[in-house]
Length: 400
Length: 126
Image 1 (tube, rainbow over the protein chains, first blue to last red):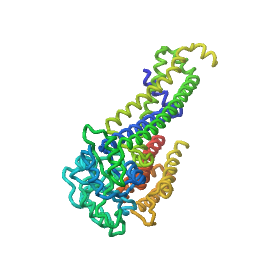
Image 2 (image 1 turned 180 degrees about the vertical axis):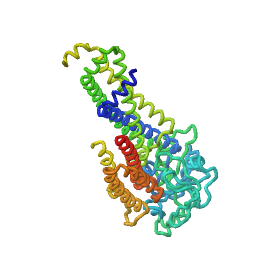
Image 3 (image 1 turned 90 degrees about the horizontal axis):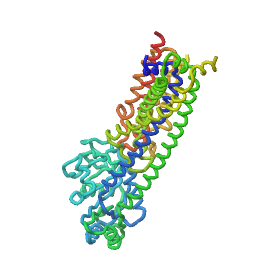
Image 4 (image 1 turned 90 degrees about the vertical axis):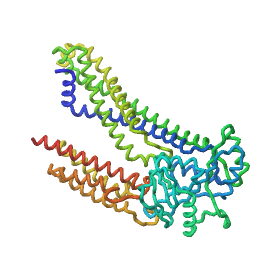
């Protein structure tokens, strides 16, 4: 009988001990895989936000509330409706150093006929837009027609379906790729559709006008700065030139998100480290106790001709098998908890969160499994070494 | 005796979590104006599935064949929120982000436990 089949028989013969060791290693693998998956999703979410924002500066209505609302809209997908006069767009374009200025108008729907949630509608100028348009182009190659909408991946409406917003029928022509940000919960349309919806909202008593005589309103202007111009200087000029508006550098917004993300990552890493230290100590104690309990069994094995090395191999094989099974169970449990509850995790964290691609996930799983098996083997190595050094005759005489 | 009881007990506990959870901490969306969306009825259906599964769990304690009824009932529970009864149209809403994944996960675990329980009972009877 070789070490492998003997190890299997030993594990089956003591199901309680095997289950305890397997559970312990499963807990280790769960914490590593689950934790690294969350951290990696947060990092991917931040990269996605960086690439989605694309603009150097965003000009928003002057009130401090609009900046907070915009950040919430971007990160958490809450609806925001803040407006400034459309003349602000011309004022932005007049500033030296501005290469492209693309306006967007936001409208929060009333509760949609599907459910009691407000949907954020974002209208953009398709000719100048450089922020949303490239993203839409990934899923829909044509321009959005009148009353056509593209929906974020978290709006559960398929292409061809009709969304009713302020009692107006909007045709879904595209579902956009996930970004892991609040933009996934929005509905996108062209400016004509937006003006139509604004008029419909007006009829329903939802006013978006700043003054009674204002004709057109916009919510934000995305600015791309010309090469060779200092973004900070252009930002200052915009703040001085555009009345009743605030220019915000996207980098400062991203820095805030990045800081929050670093905090969450640090906490998760600390928790993983704490779990690991605790589990390693418990594993060491468990293997030490197991070695003490099985001293006579190993002594008999030595007396019937098993070499020291064979004994070591037996203990290591047993622990590797337990760790492997535990690792697979732990990774499976982490996947069963993290993947279905992705939206909940994202909502609770309030940070951009985008699940990694399949290749990265497989890599993370393999890494967690490898590390778990290695730790299990290391924890048992000391016990194996101690057992192989004891004198079998003396051990048996002690117990007699 | 313990070996025979462990699976019905686990299934019973999880079934009660489905039944009670679908009306409390795993409930569908709560509408501010007091109106009901279709997700509300999905929650009600899960209450029924939970009670049915709990009854089958008690039955499977006495008769191992009852495990065979637990499996399709649990699979039915997997398909109720979202497939058989539609939910709200936003992924971020409670019915989609909490109730649906939790119910599918619980029902899948129950189906798996029933399968293992049936296999273990069959083996020990042989």
